[in-house]
Length: 583
Image (tube, rainbow, N blue to C red; front, side, top):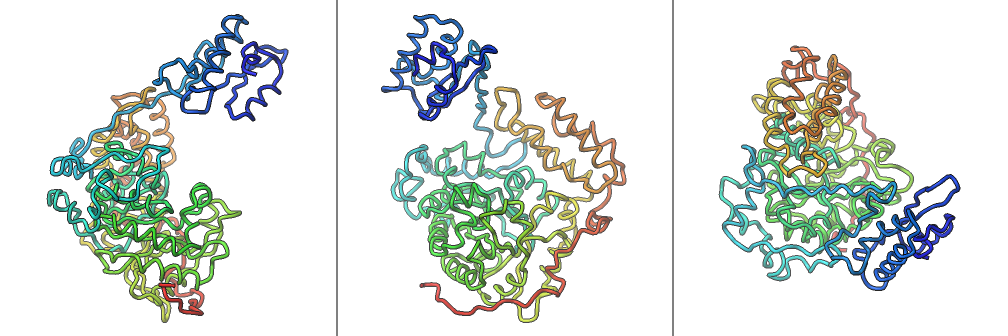
């Protein structure tokens, strides 16, 4: 079959048979008479053994028989699968430029990046450097891909000796006091974890807007962390120290792997580590079998939380979940989940109780997309108040459908608690913060946390501070082969795209920014400050210098209230049976 392909035998049926045989087939049209050449690339990591010798023989025959372009194309396509080639050749190489239509892969090899103090911005990796200096050899590389990790912290060849991360004493003893996380404020308001949104850059922007709002990271998958070595872990776990209080959200369902992932993250010094039990994405709850798919298995979640707690370095382990999943959507199911999982959780530093962030919707894993799962299932805030009533020893933060700072402030003050319901600790706001960061967060410290002033006086003030961060961070991890900085100017501009939501000429400004980014995407001399200098002229001084809370987007456009504190909620549910958590 390989020889026939090398000789350019016409017809696509043979190519289809090869495809069914487990190899990637690229069919390249040659002439109008439907003759095809299939460039076959092995899927295996190395072209050795019997398959490699077979491809090598076919390549030699193609050259010897000299059937022109077909032979050259096949020879080029299979060059890296030759059993006699060096093992350093990339396994996913494809045909060279001698094969029509072939595109060489773009290698995105970047530097491991600067660590610690980067251009005046202090990152949590300073703590890793301090551990390197105080306890040389404390870290050993994790298991490579394809190798099952050993049980968490079970030997000195692993991340560390048993119990090293149990209570944080070892970490605090080897990290200078000035690098310890500061005492966190109460979790009255938090920014929800959102994939592709709550990046380190967006969280830094949020911190410039509010000193006290809790910030959650994007979800990091346990397998990613346990198979990544220092210093490349910085790409996933490093964060500006300024952004405390920060919460790392992890996703996974295996207690041992989650324990390892938690131990890998613990030295960075997050304020809390959160377990994702609410994401309905097919990649997470479907193929990944974690996220919202964990809610029907409270015993497993309890074991995962216990394993995380033992390896979190003293950071409290919290849980974010829905009120139900598919057919497991009764209040009794939810109470059993909370009761069993809370038995394995540790108290938070601010409240002294285990904390759940409750998204007040159920998740439908079959039939609804992630976006639909955020809007179609009805909101049931009365369930969150009922949980606070039935579990006074547990703290609850409510999430879902809350759009305005006014609602967040009322929940923080305890306004609108239904008769007989328990009081919620605070609120968690997600996409509304990304859609209007200035409107939601610029006045949060004063209105929600009771501070005397807000950190930023205007959007202009905010941009001046954010540009300092961008200048220090752009290109921190080097430059890709095709000339883009990592992180790039576009990535750093992304958190600003909705900063002027609802303001005059906001759309014109975004269009100007996009044009400037396209023109200067690879220009190392053009940063975020230069882009802003070229585009902010379309906005008025009144817009740029307006203080927080003055004509906010919520007030101007009448953003719909979610009803969380309106006092017109349905009756709260009650438990039909009490089931001990030990069962």
